[in-house]
Length: 286
Image (cartoon, rainbow, N blue to C red; front, top):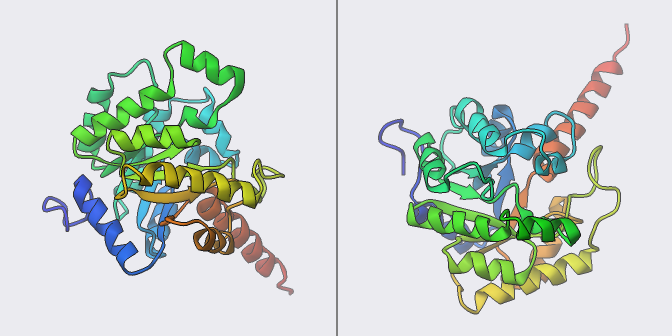
């Protein structure tokens, strides 16, 4: 349904995004959501047929040649970066598919209801919790939790987004986190199983084997399906990188609806195509 003000798609309501994704599932096709750190990435991800585009600060680091984990560090204002990419690069060029804003929900400097109002006004159709503290563990995670920068803040952000009619697609690392998110209205749950392997700046060894990734993903799906069967479930990260990997996971994980690719789509596409194209040019002789 086009936006009457622009003739383009964004913004969509929460239900309109859900309807689009349900239509994909009804056709027995996988939902594919893609992270985009630049306008040209978003433009051609849309041409490739992705169902959602997600913008978050790690996309800028990734497309600058750095590891996605840079987005978890204090190298910039995550919320400001996502808004800037949206306003000046992605939203002006995406024609029709919903664009989701990565929101750092635990940012202590922002009144989240006020910031989400800006996100909605910008033309985003939903939110994603990135950077997310769900992928941090150990002592540092405990310190974050104890000092008011907890995962619960991300849950509260999604609760606000639900009240504001924004679609939400969220990262979680554990079944209990998934249930918390689903209980406040999260529409799609992403089972995050670690940093993506491969390429020039991916991790060398997967933090989880494929069997581990499947087991962790299945536990997250099963935990939420009991109380929220209408939730969409997506896989992400670790050893799940290529289309063949995603096919394998979809075949072996009951209740999974699709995949979120950031490094897997945007970075790998650039690395491979630019390298090969340059080699073709350099093979020319006089």
